[in-house]
Image (cartoon, rainbow, N blue to C red):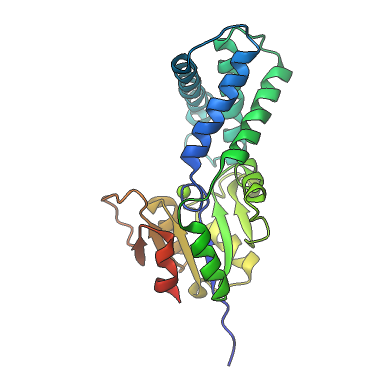
Length: 251
Ligand SMILES: [Mg+2]
């Protein structure tokens, strides 16, 4: 009898790790850093307000300068994220009256990515679920729409860099190879040497994680972390609100 190797593919952001919390913590840390060089001593409230204002302004700038002209063209997720971080750094430096040199922008951008990696933590129950699935013999990979620096340094920091194979990140795969485009799922299956029928995708986003996986013939489990009732034409194979439910579902 042929031994069938079953493969689980996880989304990264807000499925394995709390990306929202990590981004919030990283923004707080770099705002304190930007303020400390300025001679201004803002209150915690002012720091928060300036930071969030800079973040919104950066997102708007990238919408205007990158996404709007791109139209329906292929998104380069690496470039898009780099543009947001650089624009955010520039807005923060300006908010504290600092000089806008390219090296100051780069230093703050690098600090943001470093803080993000250090602040990234697994969601509750994820470590337990991964350990149980791993000892049950599942192989596990990651399929993420992100810039590479949003995934690999946090994985190393969490001690999980060797835990997942393959780690497919849209920022490395190139423009347009982004969920729910089936191409990113096909590349993951090829890299894992796995048939779609033996693969399960687990993710928190119905359109990105579930739709593309199903188009490729993979089963897809929706991680409905927020206990959302969403109108969608995507029908996942199963819905869980805690990844500790996966072993019972899959073993
Ligand atoms: Mg996600």
